[in-house]
Image 1 (spheres, rainbow, N blue to C red):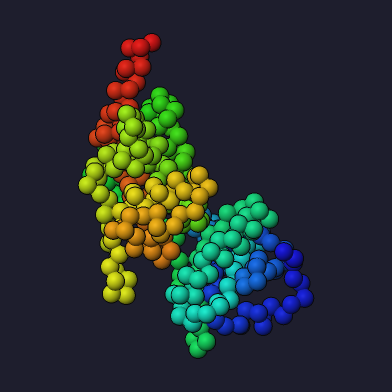
Image 2 (image 1 turned 180 degrees about the vertical axis):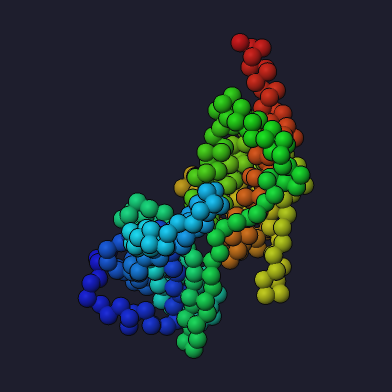
Length: 325
């Protein structure tokens, strides 16, 4: 990997077909080729003006007074280098369809981002994709993640929410094995690789289900029991007229096992009935991640309000441990 300071960058960026991924949050001093088809280059920073304007509006809300324009302009000028932008460009090999080009470049983008992470020590946030076919451009914005859940469930507000928060805080102080799960969840939220994220989220569920893993009960079975999904955590996606059925616990659990033990996860590792669901990992990983995030969020809420089967089992284990002491 060498920094390329002499290449005609404009000519490179106009090559087609290609997928362009725009991100912010890290600074690099020059452009470079991450591999034979992936180009990485720094762009003009977004700056800090939007944050200054927002802070000024908040100041007005709190204090009732409006900050002087000169002061706001000065603050914006001081933050002109904030939020540096990096573009990743993948030059497609065979495809000329926008979605296929972007999908084809996903692994290259991930590898290149890991290099940037090593160089800068910072996380990146993506905000747009531009796919260039041989004849036209397609722009896709990536809105900031906001799941807009209603405080861990409808009706869970006011005293109920405060009680949940207090219970979770008490459990974190009381039970190190439970406390490990929120730590894992925080790490999973930072993970950019969607397959790794799915595996990490299963790890969160596995940590929450620790008390149900007894007498030879495996991780996937314990997680299903915890979630009340003993008959299966089934989902279905339509893809060009083909319907793909999948079990999110089976799929993410096997993925986690293979990654953790350093073994490749292959289509044939799944039973024949579920073999087509392997395509979820390559084509629709975001759907798997979204489902697992919902599982984690709801299970944390159940631990807080005492409705979790895993928490009941953990409480019983603690009582038995006290009796043995």
